[in-house]
Length: 277
Image 1: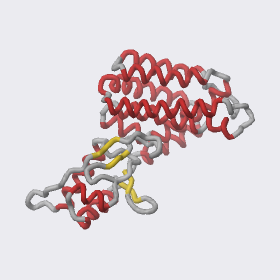
Image 2: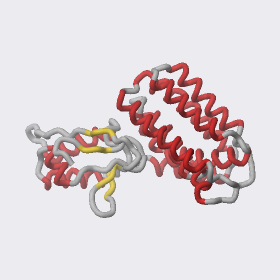
Image 3: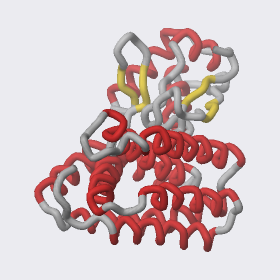
Image 4: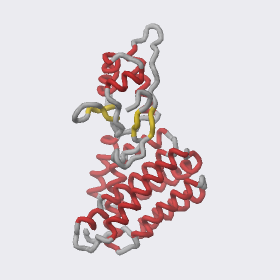
């Protein structure tokens, strides 16, 4: 790892599948009457709030981070412990820290429990997605940088590759490849939509989408199961993501919104109650 940069994923994709945005840490010079650890804390807190350190991102090792920020390890450690006590970072097995998804337990978990008890919430989630994501794709089309588009392309490529790999295994008998279409592919689908939110550069929207990501992922998994049960065209569903991407990459906000709404309408029309598959 370089002393000047650290690769930190902007989305919750596994490290091997996320393009990873680069977060640059700068040397800290404390003003009079402020402790060095306070300045370290403020820089890291700001990076979390602004989304430069996204939920799930791994911080560099203490030695690398102290070197990049130009501070002593005791000062850094004091700041890290303060961040941990605030719930902004969490320790990980084997050492080091991950940026926490602090609001997820407050939002996603109660909503997930509600969904499990009330079938109407399936439609409610789709309505919520239309409200949030229709605006998100508009902003993404207007604001996406070259790095955002590259990250979206990587998320889309992963989705399309997983679908192609599992498609021929879907034989209705629950084989391993077929089950991938009902687990792995929906997960990558949800990550693509999360990457769209990140391309908006709206800090509140980004944090909100991260907070409800598990709710979104669970909803997408359920939708795939229902769509398969209906015998709908999954190739069309996957292709809709390519149309959304093309509109965002072309900075065509109207086309992006239209493609997103068509995508959600397709899901709504093909995800009524069916037997479990």
